[in-house]
Amino acid sequence: MPAHFQKIQTGGVKVSDKLLRIHIADPLQGEKSADRLCRILAEEKISIVFLTMDRTGVHRRTSCCVDIAHEKRVRALIESEKALRERACFTGAVGLLSMFPHQSQLQVLGGSLLALGEANLPILDLSSSLAALSFVLRYTDLETALTALGRFFLFPADPVQLRSSVHVRQE
Amino acid sequence: METVAVYCEPKLRTYGFKKVTDLSLLSWTAGPNQTAACGLMFQKLGETGLRFRLVVAHGSENRGITIHLLLDRGMEAVAQGRLQGIWGRPPESDQAIHCLSPVEMLFFHGPHYGDRYGIADLVFGVLAHESISVVLSACSASSIYLVLPHKEAQHAVAVLSEAIEIPKEIGTRGKDPREKTIHDCT
Image (cartoon, rainbow over the protein chains, first blue to last red):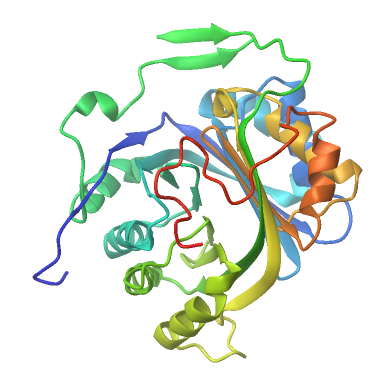
């Protein structure tokens, strides 16, 4: 880190509860099992907390995170369908670390990748949203990630902001 | 504390629905333990004042990372040139920077999307039914971003409007009231 480096002030950071990550690699042509996964999760009334999809090479890759409380049911659903069973893999427990605001600034993106990379923490997924940069990390890495990000960013002192105490569930 | 919510919407409610055209998608894969190098690269690029529209990344089992950076097309040459200069991988390398341009983007937000089931299924189901291919997408917090091939965004708006609430006049370059300094480089 250069001597003149100044930490970037952020509005805050939040971490999620434990999540299950489901990763699917579909061939570009043919049946898209990721669409099927979205359908069965909807039918089972399971919320998708985070989802990204990209096309790389010959695959369409989808990563999706759901509350780990649903792990047994989700694994059973995927196991029951051949296409999903063959293309899906699981990572759990993972957590979502969201830092805001990014204001579309590459310095914020760069600083966060630098911090997590120097701490040797694998980033499973990353996405920007309107205000936040959200990282999917191994749940056991979340505390280390916060410490690592603290080398580059200033967070508000209020610890209440770290974890949300209100959960919304749709009926 | 848990709040149980019931949503009674004939169509999925949205706010801040936007269509943006003339975008470029830069993508590359960094090898194991090169995440910090990518971070430095973004910091250097950021010194030019350039901003991103969307970033999505996937990690791989070997600790590599594939990064997709969506920018305004007017910034494509500057960004690609600078990234190439810093990253330094030859075009034939499997870590070379690839550019898909032009592409278009739809994005919108809605109440508690991240806590509700069926949102992704609704959106992707409608697009798949009309054979609209999605290049890149992200559903995070209350936001949904869809990167689409050139000239597909308007078609997507038309088919999505059957299922979700879309204002008759949707924003393009204008700012979402919740956006602060986003997209000021256009």
